[in-house]
Amino acid sequence: MTAPILVWIRRDLRLHDHAALSAAAQSGRPVLPVFLCDEALEGLGTAAKWRFGAGVGAFAQSLEAIGSRLILRRRPCLEGLSDLIQETGADTVYWQRSYDPEQQARDAKVKAALRQRGVQVKSFAGHLLFEPWTVETKTGGPYKVYSPFWRAVKDRGVATPPPAIKELRAPGTWPASDDLERWNLGAAMRRGAPILAKHARVGESAALDRLNWFTQTAVESYKEQRDFPGVDASSALSEPLTYGEISPRTIWHAGQRALAEGAAGAEHFLKELVWREFAYHLLHHWPDLPRQTWRREWAGFNWNRAETPQVTAWKQGRTGIEFVDAAMREMYVTGRMHNRARMIVGSYLTKHLLADWRIGLDWFADCLTDWDPASNAMGWQWVAGCGPDAAPYFRVFNPVTQSDKFDADRSYRNRWIAEEQGAPPETALDYFKAVPKAWALDPGAPYPHPIVTAADGRDRALQAYGMFKDR
Image 1 (cartoon, rainbow, N blue to C red):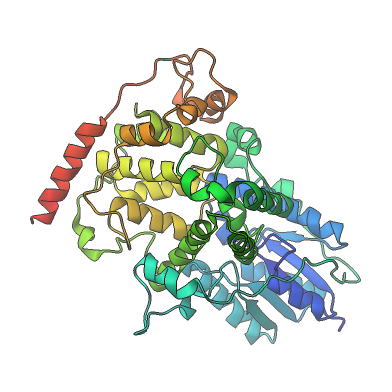
Image 2: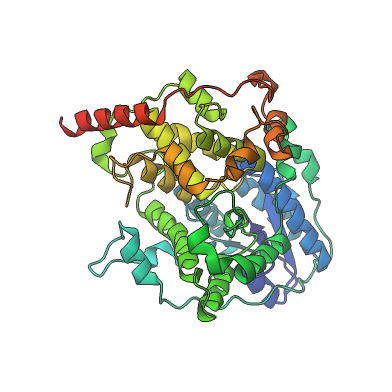
């Protein structure tokens, strides 16, 4: 009862619904929450690494508020855990499972190595509603289409989350901890970090507040309003979900309560949460989803893999297509992008520009603060037409008609595009403060002409697809 339990914290920066911390607390033994700046964190994209650091700082404060601490070590995971076991006499390690293939393989190696040394290791269900291997078709095997996946899980029981942890037994002596600021996880952000910080909602408390606001205010009209990027109509919970500042079970039960109370948009909201589950279901069964076309016949399509001037213009939000540019600038300023806008910019890159979808996937991984390995991969394959349940190859989003339909009052475009506005808002000007100086961009410069018009891009895409299909 005196040997401490190490709880390895990963993408679960919360005190509510935390199975590993709860089990450790209930043991009656001292609990050492540990966060490692390991190979997985070091490999994150620029914005995601910065945001993870902010989340770790907020979680450390939450632990301090209940009399505990978060021990920080910048070490490869097995070495970091082994060092702490030796220093503290801990004989047990708990963690919550990851579901992307690389981290699953890492965890398996760590578990095997620690058990060989006589350390008890236990993993708990992680950041999903349903373990991916527990959802199968009636004939066995994974689902490949979302709608039947939704029907298979929508009536499954989801356990009610336990209350927040109020106390963790402290060890007699705390081991040394790194200084989070010395990790400098936002170094690569450079001058963009303070811009992102203005828009970030960091920590468990902020996530719970946002969920409460959404279910009390916006869920009623969610289905009708969610496609309008100029309206604050979505839950905006993808970012705290990414870092585990809120659990999907907490969101699910809040959505179910709204549904029981008659909120018109509640079921559609729950479907979007399950869409995330579907992405992890696919990633579990097709671990090469982030790099290889899911529809194998598309492996031979001749997407352009080069960093062309057109691709550079797309990355910089300088295509001359307002909806596309507004979305790319939104991402650079806030670290997020509206879901409708993601479809538009993805279609423009892969169809109007005929650029490889993996270029977009990698750019999003570097720029998004809500980057998620499963959702990002499935989303890019979906919009490119080569993925599961994908948009048909002949569906080419017209960014001009899309803006007419979903941004008729120009509120979204005006929020993010400064050029040729008499008095551009702070959000639009912040883009020029955040981007690298090497881009040499000026809000007073003329807005660029389209690099590829909506009509020309569609014609080129359909011609290329037609030739590919006729081979």
